[in-house]
Amino acid sequence: MSPFKYNICFVYPDFENLGVGYLIALCSKAGHKVDLVTYQADNSYLGKKQKKILFSEIANKILETNPDIVALSCVTDNYQFQLKCAKEIKKIKPEVITVFGGIHPTAVPELVLEQPVVDAVAIGESDISFITFLKKCSKNNTTLLPNEEIQGIVFKKNGKKVGKFEEGPLINLDTLPFPSKEPFYPSIKQLTREYRIITSRGCPYSCSYCFNSFIREMRCGSSVIVRQRSVDNVIEELQYAKRKYNIKNVFFIDDSFTTDKKWITEFSKKYKKKVLLPFTCLANPQYIDKDIARLLKSAGCTFIQIGIQSLHRPISLYILNRAVTNKVITQAIKDLKDVGIMVQVDHMFGIPSDTVENQEEAVLYYNENRPGLVSVFWLIYYPKTPIILTALDQGILTPRDVKKIENGERLVKGSIHDGGCLKDPAPFYSLQLLMNYTPFLPKWLVRFLISSRWYRVLSIRSYYISTALPRAILCLIDKRYSAGRTVLASFFK
Image (tube, rainbow, N blue to C red; front, side, top):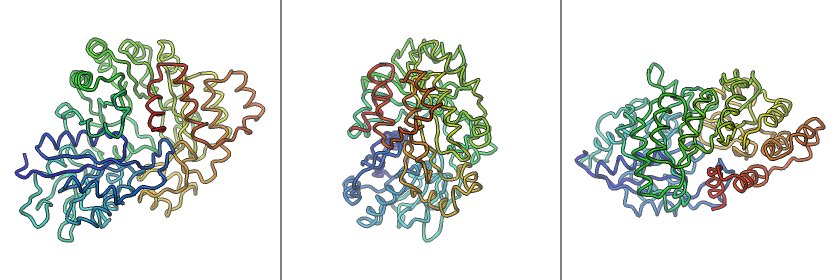
């Protein structure tokens, strides 16, 4: 343990973040006083924007905790908000140490550290490196900052950058304490209904639009891409959650929950014996077969979200770096539906080289191979993802655009559900609407709307009508769609 104990305040928008939850638990275990301050920020997932955020009020709330260190976790979408919080903190109490971590600082750590209000950046997973950083901090120094390098954290001291821009040590996941949930509860009421848990870290894929692509590159040479918690460790957390929070259902947020068939087999037996709650998970169709579907169903899986993104083979393979074929996708949907698991497919608009004709074919495909829900997402470009190079080559992005992306600035007004980064998304709005409603419409009507092109009169740019309403309908007609209730509660809170 550190010879000094610090007041640490974590800052995050009002969404649960398991990474922050783990760090809060680790800091508390090490004997530090820990607080969490949340605030309502724009929600890029829901397309929800706040009219006005008073960062001075947020800073005052943070400083009421009397922090020595303020830790701000950032994704690209909230980076500018977190910077504004740090600026207000430094105006009032400049001696407070600000540490920025999360996926955005991991992607562009040098740029983040250039900000005058940022004292340190944590790169990659920081379960070990952040606690080591706290141990090396000293109240005997002029500032709290350590006198030596910390692997995985770079900080500014005496006008110099101390440390290397590299990830810190990766932890054995079973040695982690369970993530702290209580600090998030006051601002996220739906947490009492759905318990979010992660059983692994890492992803076996390198999709060109996803941050996992540059994480794999960062860990080039590592033999461990995906690390898995033991089944017993996962079951222990869920039993604890049942006792403490009276949870109603579980959401496994792993990038691909079904990757390890042996693990799923053991999990299925123990989960239905010791937990027995309905659950939702995410999966890649390449890791779905009849056996996996039966195991998931027997354990209590009611709903599964699978990533499709594009059904046009050249785009899927060469633009998105996804090798899955439509034949595999079709079989995965069938296997899941055959055992009674509801399927949501995630489909992407705004991909470089994509066309209206490709998306018309996709609508027809979903019309014949009906999932329970089609969820349309629009491509958002994130720092250091390979798809940015494709967009530069095609003239979709400029070098100036890339700089804005790396600084967390929006290129256009669109959100992940509303236009994405396309400068002219209008031709696709009617297809987005039709695709979202396809599972609820008669097959003959969908075929007619596509063949006659009458769907073009349906061009509506509204999150409520295009995206929220289909989910509301599904919530009403099928109780298996528990995840939808959480999403809708987030939007209407």
